Length: 315
Image (cartoon, rainbow, N blue to C red; front, side, top):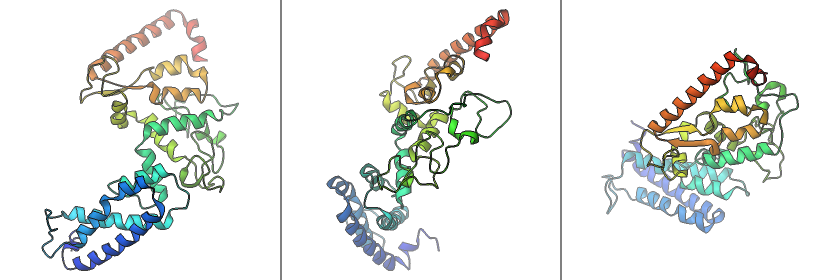
């Protein structure tokens, strides 16, 4: 028997009883833990479970169209996830993360997954926080941003990859420290110690730094968030963004390597973060890339004529 169709067949009545029990447990959890704002978000979920418990042999909810099998599965899955969440949720937990978790179509079953989901859905906040955490420290004295031709662990082969001194094994900060910003990692990958337990020695990334690193390395995956920041207007022309719009770096990364590498870390992270990202229409992007290519060609020709001009840049 198909697992998704089971609640609507022979085991339907038993599934309804289990769903009603889950509903009572979840209501108790929400009553003792949630704020009025969380209670408002929660209002729709008990209604779905009550509708599920009233399904007749025909699978029809009174006054409502037939509930799809996927909807039945989702309601039951969320009831089980919320039961797991209430058992593992500590007395102290970030309210905005819990608010986000309860509002998701599929509720995260553990606090750790709730934290990861929060930062994954708020990449702009993650970028700002990750760069702020990095500014609390500084790069090791012997570290320098460099590129290699052959593959080597933690050493970038292209200037398109953001500099990360603590991802190099020679400068690894040790257990319980983030390999992106170099700051302590606490419970659930959080960036501050709300639980007074000290760093989590089994963790090597902040949850926000994971989301920020993904934004820095694959910004095109977050075009929806960047479009919203620009009110869906092209940053180059001011026209409305079309469906073929593309993500671009305001200061090209080749210029960062050529002109700004002496800025050092963590100041360099600015050029991979949201302040240096823009969404522009494809035609404007092509024109900008063409101008940049011509500029690079002119610079190469100038260096061939006078190699001493590039001595400082190549050192």
